[in-house]
Each structure stands twice: as C-alpha cells, then as structure tokens.
Length: 112
Length: 114
Image (cartoon, rainbow over all chains, first blue to last red; front, side, top):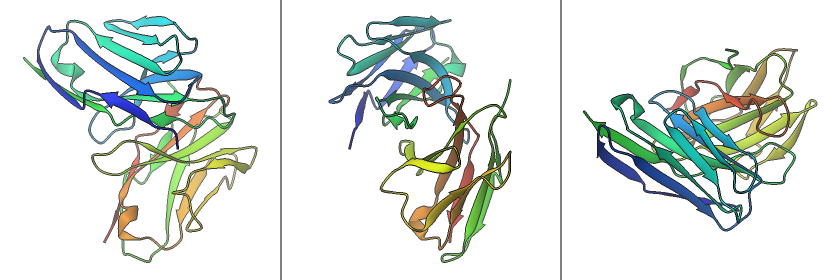
C-alpha cells in the first residue's frame, strides 16, 4: 500500500532554533497535510496544501507541496517550548473517499 | 470552533467482549472516518463512510469491525470480539467533503483490551 516516509524520527532542539522536517512518498498525492498531536489528544491540523508547488504559512510554520507531488516539508521558525509534540504529515490521493495516509511522525522536543 | 466529540475517553474491556465506540461528528459534515493509533505508532486509516455506507476500508477493518450511523448525529465503531492487539487509540474524524477541507479529528478513545 501507499506509504509516507517522514524524517527525522525525532529532534531535540534549543528554544529559538528553526526546525525542518519532511515527508516523501513513491506515490503521488493530491493534497498534503501537516498535523500536530499532543499526548492523549487527536491530531490537530496545522497546514493544508492543495496544489503542487504551493508554499503556505501559518504564523511561524511554513509548509510546501513538492512540485513532483511526492513530497512536502514543514518548517518551524524560532521554536518555543509549546511546539513540543509529535508532527505528522498526511497525504490524500485521488481517491474520492477522503482517506488519509499518515507518516510515522517526528517527535519534537524543545529545550528552554 | 466546531468539534468532533468521542465517548468514552477510555474503555477497558475483556478479550472477546464487544465494544462500541461513539462519535458525534460536526453537524454539517457529510464524510465520517475512523482511524487507529497503536501506542507510539502512526495513525492508520480504518474506514470511511458516506451516504450511509462504507466508501473505503483498510485491511485492518476485517469482519470483526462494523460502523453505523444509527441516527442523525452519532457515528459508531463496533468491535465484535476484541483481541489484545485491538488495544489502541481510536480516532473519529469528519469532513465537509471527500477532500480534506474541514477535516477534523476527535480527541480519541483509548481502548485497552485485557
């Protein structure tokens, strides 16, 4: 089945540093999403990307939909302690069922 | 902000017992989903539901699983005879359309099978 490869698996950074994580796939996706998950909670949508090449920002977060439609990255600038959590990429293909395929997640820890 | 509501937040059940996990999707949403997340792993798609029928299901969603929209507001996931490996967080989600616009997850039900 389709898989998303997300990297890095974990990151431990100093407050104020910038962070970058990415997802790649062997398959084309029509939509890329980035979610954050706090412990014991459901995924919360950060950014949605709908067109190849699209670059979208949400505050300190910036994400891009790769031109090949097989990859996406998420950048977090000037990290703060509340950025701690697990970040997941997710892709939706041409299926009309709404199914999302998730990456394995990037665990982010921020040292104050 | 509209929410997807899931109950209970935590369910402990004996192996072999039936469980029903409940969800109230966002009221104007038409597509409903269940996902599963085994502890420490990624979120996995189980099933999507539209117009009172399953539109897609994964290989995880075998004969032990079923979904139902018994009334205009609830969306349920039933596991007929639970196994130890069914222990996981189960997330309900809903969306306005098959595309991801407005795709919202609930906070999940932690199912523990003992």
